[in-house]
Amino acid sequence: MSAIQHQNFSTSISSSTSTFLGKTEFKNIKTLNVLIPSKISGVVKCVASPSAEKTTAYKTKVSRNENMAKLQAGYLFPEIARRKAAHMSKFPDARVISLGIGDTTEPIPEVITSAMSKRSYALSTVDGYSGYGAEQGEKKLRASIASTYYANLGIEEDDIFVSDGAKSDISRLQVLFGSNVTISVQDPSYPAYVDSSVILGQTGQFQKDVEKFGNIEYMRCTPENGFFPDLSTVRRTDIIFFCSPNNPTGCAASRDQLTKLVQFAKENGSIIVYDSAYAMYVSDDSPRSIFEIPGAKEVALEVSSFSKYAGFTGVRLGWTAVPKELLYSNGFPVAKDFNRIVCTCFNGASNIAQAGGLACVSPEGIKAMQNVVGFYKENTDIIVDTFNSLGFKVYGGKNAPYVWVHFPGQSSWDVFGEILEKTHVVTTPGSGFGPGGECFIRVSAFGNRENVLEACKRFKQLYK
Ligand SMILES: Cc1ncc(COP(=O)(O)O)c(C=O)c1O
Image: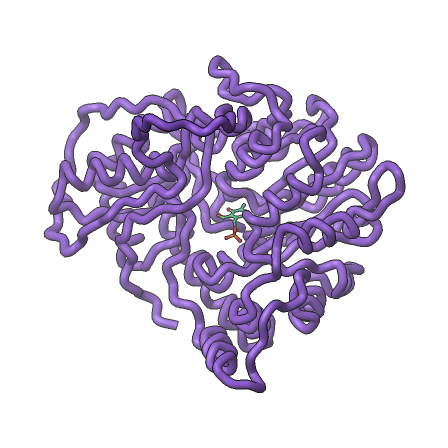
């Protein structure tokens, strides 16, 4: 795999939404001499932001979904894209480096793309053509995912539902549980859990004073508690969204901590939606799946994805594992209802993407994915070392492609603005992931090596 690839400087963003936006004031601090002539022309497309509001004479009689209106506080990644675009027009010659959104940059290994191109060409032949496939995914892929990621954990082929990615599955799971459930999330957390909950009507209004939605339990994760919530203070909810290794903090929960989480769910009769999208980045003995914890199959399901392993953020392929042992209060299997949701809301993942998925979990594919993950982990080490050498408190990074840097007493939007203004590097303000992210920024290790090194050089100049 080539270590250095050209960074995609397109600023087209269609990523996660968030409800936590703060004001930005760019402080006037020393400017770095990092302007480099650029061949970049960025076109900003914030697909999640509303199109320019037009005044039309005609209005339908349809009321706006009031839950959508609750999301009014804003969108994290489109807001970052907007600020990046404004920055680029202010500094047209700057070489802007994005370590902001969690999009991959390394090419997909050829063992995987060749399988996809083979399947793609076969679609032009009578024998090789296939139309709609099974909504749950191709049998062989389901079996391979089960044996690759859940060997000896009791998860079987028919527990695996192949999807077009973890984010879509998070929303499908919300549809599955409906509007009447209560949820808890880690604070900070990947914004899709909260926003999909708001859209489904599970929450109250956004409370500006605390920057939280009513009726969501925010489980604070801080350096003081090792980024694992103090469960003795957590209110019972029906559903617990839990992501490990975590986006954005980059921290993975230990076996002991996850055992406590499973016990907590069991005592409360809750269901854990465990997001393991970064499991392949674990390099210590932290569990890679919640099903490594005894008893988890009765209280948890797991969403995961090839996005961050194989560079499938654009290809789109993920899965959800729903064990047969997971039952509702009336004894009905959750998997049966999820099957119904998948059949109703989804017509199955792309057959070309599934051919790629099958190649991913072949022995050569796994090796190739480990190389990709290893490359990003080297980037992570470079970023961690940089901030450590500058005297910052740095978290995460070890088991995830995200570095969580502490700026005590400072607004994370201010820090984001300062870094962008003075180094032309895009990061992500921690408060975009919930109030618990205030005073932090997330630096993503997804980037080509040249850019990561250059960004770190600029950080050193700024903070020396
Ligand atoms: C924690 C987490 N879950 C899910 C996703 C979405 O993954 P996918 O690309 O499979 O939709 C992301 C993407 O950044 C993520 O960080």
